[in-house]
Amino acid sequence: MKNAHERFGKLVYRRLTEKTATNLRVFLDAFVGEDRGKAHLISVVGGDVEIGALAAAFANGDSFTVVDLYGAESIVSLGEKPLSFRGSIVVPGRKRPLRHLVSCSQELADNTADGKLLLISDDQLFIWSSLVCHYGLPASPEWGSWMISQLQQQKRIQPLPSFGYTGVAVKAKRKELLALLCRGLRSKQLAFPAQNGAVEWPDIQLIKKAG
Image (cartoon, rainbow, N blue to C red):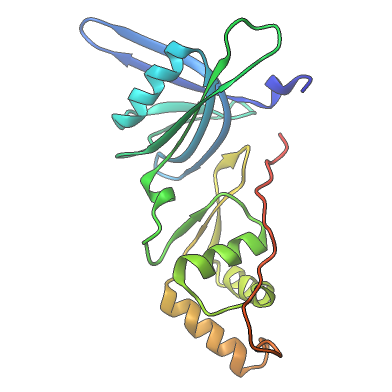
């Protein structure tokens, strides 16, 4: 894509020891974080040496600096035991492929927490289907619009600092969501399906946010 580099941020990692000095700067494709220095999703591209060093730094819980598309800087860390995935990107005219590293925090990957769910999208259907799957809610896709509107009114869906993708934190416990479903059914804002059978959910895709 022409001028794609203009839609990248930067990740800067510095570390000084008695014997060595590490100073790395790579392109940052996507970032989702949180206040108080938390990073939840990092996607970077670079050479073999840079990506190898960053994978080790992330695994150690080291802090690094994120520079967004507009030059704003923040010092963050992925915390303990982040998940990392490596790949290669072949670029025409380049002898060696670029290395791609995607890392996410344990909190983003956790599928057992009750009370806070981190998601990489602000699409209403994606949020609703994620809540239904995460908490095992007896619900249908048609109930999503009303449920999400109620959660938004209660300010339980909060945007996260991000670029590349949109991140949100949904702060609600399973019992609170079940109580909200009961209220919707009793007030007839929600209705049971006309026929018994399996509930079919539409296909959902994550869409990268334009820079």
